[in-house]
Image (tube, rainbow, N blue to C red; front, top):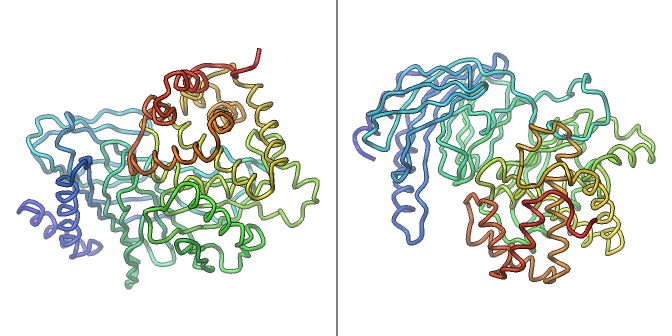
Length: 474
């Protein structure tokens, strides 16, 4: 670990909410990083040890972080949310703060080593619910959530990081008593104190770290190929909305098709609201449910998502299958730039389609595929999947974004399965997950692996992803 890391850990003891055993965590992190770097074929990555306090009522955060940069990285640049101000920086570099709206870049010049310690605090900007960004709504936006959750998402820069890549994050956070916390990765320990509760997380080498806070509790568990822990309002009947056999069926199906997850357990948090939506982080799935569902007629339930390009079966099943698939596509392999998020969204959408076929049969699958093709055709000339999230920023049409970035890649994969066989396609997808585990891929590399070395097939795949329009349509 070195004397610098030891001195840093000792100094943290001066604040009552900082755990005195952080030095042990830092030692474990540095030893793991050294082991990984020395193993054959290992990819050196940035790593982080983070300790802080968050008050969800005030949206106020105070923290200290120790970063270890990938030595091969030519630049020492970190991102930190607007509203969070650097209090101290310890290292061989001097910071230059560059404001970019909601995100602030800090470029450190003159760095001569690979460690950087920063402390910061401030009030975070209002953080929207990520599950609602492209959720299908059954009620006006003015209606409030029944369950109020507060999110600290990795993409919202609540901790300093050098980019959205896979790497080690050890995080220790305290919150006022009465608030519960779940996070991506692995929950190592929960320690109630007099006025605060301390949570210790390990992201298990995942893609960043995300947290959610609320007044929820444990409401049950399931045993799939890994344990599934369910959380929500104490009286919430999760089995009514999402039958437990459906959760187990989908997890077992994805496990069979795509292989294991590198997690000891999966947490599912249910949020009562006025729409169906979801968000998935490695080891944590948050499902928003429409609490008015029981009062709707059968026809109303069918109509809720009829306008969505991603409507395959019903609102509940569509959300569940898509978000669970993200444990593989996004959790194990993800995209390198936001413009390439079609990789995780398209694969999750295709996974939902083939799970529908396995569950309901060929005819419902072909009907869903034909409907999706019709929806994609309506928007395919507006952009290409390779535009990714940039397409959403330019277009501002949720249906167009879903059709092009989610739906068109799923159609490509279904067409590819017709050409080479679904068994061969799933074998190639498993190979991608195995050989690129815990890595970000760009469009070029992903399509190269998907083509299996066939140049003509690679050209055909690029037509789907990099060009406007729908192949085969005049």
